[in-house]
Image 1 (tube, rainbow, N blue to C red):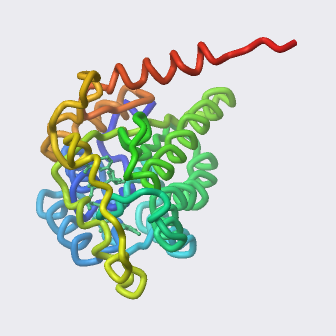
Image 2 (image 1 turned 45 degrees about the horizontal axis):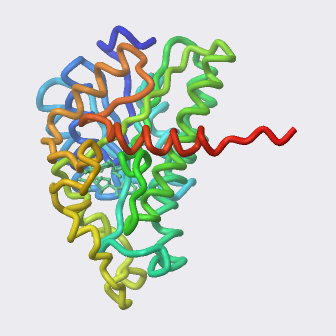
Length: 291
Ligand SMILES: NC(=O)c1ccc[n+]([C@@H]2O[C@H](COP(=O)([O-])OP(=O)(O)OC[C@H]3O[C@@H](n4cnc5c(N)ncnc54)[C@H](O)[C@@H]3O)[C@@H](O)[C@H]2O)c1
């Protein structure tokens, strides 16, 4: 477990805004040196400047996590500059707007979204984990999923798929490190609604590839039910409510605490308990012994 954070080194992707920025600032508050990575190079520079102004060693890099070569370069630069990396935060992520059914989610939407949300995490592992294992000592990885992976989220199918993949990847990798006795902890960050720029997730998507160039029918049943753009109750399922959005500033400290305690899950709001229990009940009661 990475209990003592002072003078550790962390790489945070998507650290130019929102949750990633909050994690970078919270880690820096514990004396961690930070590599700020973001596809928005100016935003990354601004965060690194802010960290250096309070005495933290920080460098920034413009990185598209969907690009394996760029993430390998991120790792090369991080190790060249700091000599070691103790904490990897695979946080960069995007979502599609307007919400749409999977039949309105075309191949290019799916490739773009999975490229960042899922392959971005795979690229992070590919570039950093061999060196993290080799250098020895306690290390930690945080992967950002979403409550979309806990609930059935019609209208956000591609996002739900990508975050479910991150969730499975994370949970498996944590078990493997544990079983192999390797001192690398893994936490899955599962944010509910957080007030960030996630609604403008397509701002860095190549214009020629954007959905506004196509006719996409907005998935409106969510709006009628106050989900996921509003906050109202889902009829008959009060604990499946979409929670009120939280300030991104609180998320970083939750992640810091989870790293210290090597906690498997970090939630920003209460879990959608009834949805989870309903799903588990349906799975359990569907089990058959056909031998
Ligand atoms: N805000 C929420 O309500 C919410 C809820 C659940 C999960 N999440 C997840 O939290 C993570 C952070 O999102 P946020 O809410 O802070 O949004 P945000 O848009 O404020 O921040 C995301 C950052 O990632 C960067 N980014 C986007 N594409 C990138 C790429 N290809 N390579 C590198 N960086 C890239 C953006 O430039 C931005 O700085 C995402 O994985 C998101 O899916 C957010």
